Every structure is written in C-alpha cells, then in structure tokens.
Length: 215
Length: 166
Image 1 (cartoon, chains in turn blue, orange):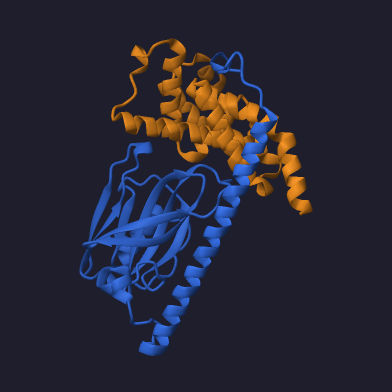
Image 2 (cartoon, rainbow over the protein chains, first blue to last red):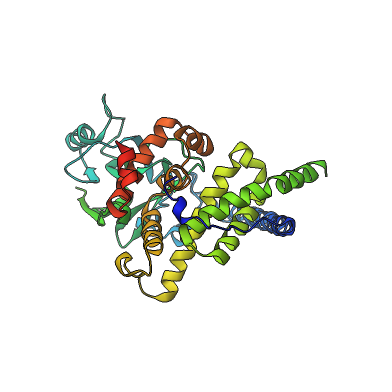
C-alpha cells in the first residue's frame, strides 16, 4: 500500500458501546429526518393549496399561467418564470467538444444557430428551434461524472446564470465535459442580456460572460 | 419491528470492520487519533441512517464518507484559523507535510474523482472493487483515477503513484 506509512501503529479497537452509540444517534437522526420530511410535505401541500385558492380567486389568464405572484415570486426578466418550460427548453445535451470560442455561444438567427450547432452539437441536423421565437445558447460545463440537470436560470439585472442540479447520487457516467444547447424565450430576454457561467476553480476557469444582442 | 431488529443486528455485526476502515482512512488523512475516532464514529452513524440502501457497498460508502468528513473538518479549521495551512516544506515532519498535501489535493478534486482517488490510492483497492463500491464501470474508474492521479502527481511527490500510472 502506498499510504501505509501514514497508518496509526496502534489503532483503537471498536468497542461494542460505540456501536450502540452510533445506532442510537442514527435512530435519532432518522426520526428527525422523517419529521423534517413530514413538515416539508405539509408545507408544500399548504403552498399548493394556497396557489390553487389564488387561481380560483384571481383567475387564470387563459394561457395556463396564474397571474398572482408571477413577477413577485420569480423576479426574472420581464417577470418570466426562469425555471419554466416557457422560458427555456434544453434542445440537446451532448459530450463537449473543444470549442475555441469558449464555453458560451449564442445564436439569434438561423445562420448563427447552424454555426453554433456545427461547433458544439452532435453530428446530424440541429434540433428544431424557431429563431423568431427563440434565442439559442450553448453552455459547456467542465467534467463531472454526475450529468446534471439544467434546473433554471437566475437573473441579476439582465445577467442570466444557468443553475445546474445533480440528479443522481451514484454517478456512473464517464468523466467528460457536457454542452447544453438551450432555447430561451426571445420575448422574455428582451433586446439584450448577458449569459454568465460562474468560475470553476477546480479547472482554473475564470467566470465567463457573453453579451447577447437580440435584434 | 423485524426489519428494525435485523437491521440493528446487521449494523452491530458490521460495526467493528467498518469502524476499522473508517478510522484508517481518517487517520491517514488527519493524523489525529481523537479526531479520527470522532470522524469514524460520525461516518458510521450516517451509515446507519442510510443502511438500507448501502447494500454491498457499505465499506466503500463508509470510506468515502469518512474522507469527505475529514476534508470538511480540515476546511472548517482553515476557515477558523483564517489563514492557509503551513506550506508542506515548513511543516513539522514528513508525514505531516504529506498529509497537508494530500488533504489539499483531495479537497480540490471533483467529488467523483475524490471518491475514486480515496478508494484506489489511499485505500489501495483494485479497480474492479472500486467500480463495484461506487456502482460504475471499471472504465469509468480508470478515467477518474487517471485524472485524479494527474492532480496528485503534480502536487504530491509520490514516485510510486507516478510509476503505477504507466
């Protein structure tokens, strides 16, 4: 073994009472977890009930979106819900290719979209996107064995930052970078926005920003 | 009730072996007996909470959990001290210097690479066992290990690691 020289020459034995202590503490934590989960479930049910009540009271605009609290809750661009499928759709998720343009790209017309796809996409035709309705961006994240999910965007004064969440605990995927090609709702992003990818210290990558002008 | 009893019995039976693994990992990283006992006990407590889903991966889970706890503890101490740990070159002795470097390297690795590095290099497990413990393919372990090894080779002066990579 390579690190045996770092071993304790006289490791302590595991006494039975230590097992009992771990067991008792484990049980206590489990009960607490169950209590917390129960509380969260109850809170969610309350929220769902409240939203349902608002829908009944305030009505629905006819497009399926509850008007009450829309901008207040999300605070997004033009009140858009930055986690909703109306705001963004992941068009493709592929193994990253080396792109001299860096980890961020954007396309606001079909020609730019074709160029973006040739730079970052898989072989074959690009996924369907209506560039009259959408702005397409690509975001490449550094390698991780747990392929994350693009959960939502956050907005800080017109600076959009994608938020990724890991979906699985056991990560069985190879360690590779991944590129998300994402369609953003053109009306929501307005005439210009900045796409931001936070720094990744592990790989020595600085924060990346791309300003996108939307004609 | 039967489930609880059987689970508790399993835990009691497995405790001594798991504790030994956890303590060894903690001590290799921290070099502190008291802290290593605490870390091992904490890892075992957490193992009990997740016992049902650990299945045959208990040892791997406990070892990687212990390493994570050790690194978290080290980070907390760094923050509390408000200054980086002394450079390896001025550390008290060779083992302490090596531990500091090891901690730094492990702390910087992405989670999956760190899990592989701990089992493959710190615990010296064969690739197949690492793959089984982490629920991934041997190929995936090789890739993670290669990345982790590159980082370790850059920052740790451990010739045997470099030799093994070839």
